[in-house]
Image 1 (tube, rainbow, N blue to C red):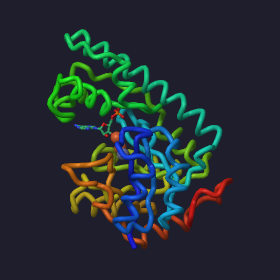
Image 2: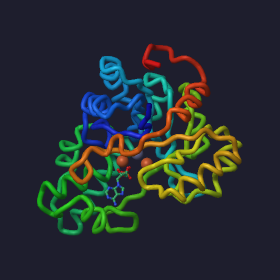
Image 3: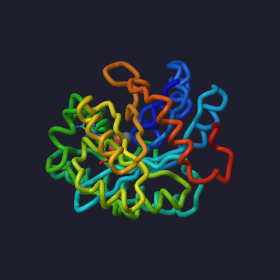
Length: 280
Ligand code: AMP
Ligand code: FE
Ligand code: FE
Ligand code: ZN
């Protein structure tokens, strides 16, 4: 029994539909998956239905963009009520911010002599929570870059010419929002954001867990965060952070979280969802 608790679909910057993702999960014999699209829970209802039909346990989630002391960090919410009014209101606000940011990035590209249109990016993204990967894919599709990696390296990475900072909620507000929507708040891929000094403060503020296992964490990084999770009595999660095919292979399931950690997450779950989404 194993789980993958960090997955994206076409409702943010992943390429799979919720049904395709769920089918991969079943084929790879994952016992449990969580959908954690950026700043949206829109794919959760469809994934919950697909997983139920396939006998895969489903956890409704999201990955919220937040900041602590000026540093971006991502908060995973697990067991969210995907229709929670406050969560819907707040995520709608962040989706609008994302859409305006796409327009600004495109304007910057235009000033660099690249005639991409925001409409082309929105058409390709076809979701309410578009991000830089969609701009990258649009640049590739229009022939301005040969790969999304090249698009990031030349234009989209922090401090590159088309990079636009993103308004983020404070990590404290993010934790409170996740709790309000019935969820557990977990700091995503701490090894990628270098936010160790924030962890004691976030733990005090109610952070529930650390994503110790992530495809971009080395074994030493995972060990480091396992120790921190132990020190601060935090839950441990892990996932592939799959956005679709990677090097021609489905990344989903490339990280298999041990059932013991999932069981602790189930036990820590705050309260039953108002609807019947979790197929526990
Ligand atoms: P955004 O949320 O718009 O700032 O975009 C962040 C997303 O871009 C991440 O969740 C990844 O999916 C993707 N990403 C970040 N850095 C890179 C990179 N160097 N190459 C390709 N994709 C990236
Ligand atoms: Fe992403
Ligand atoms: Fe992330
Ligand atoms: Zn992610």
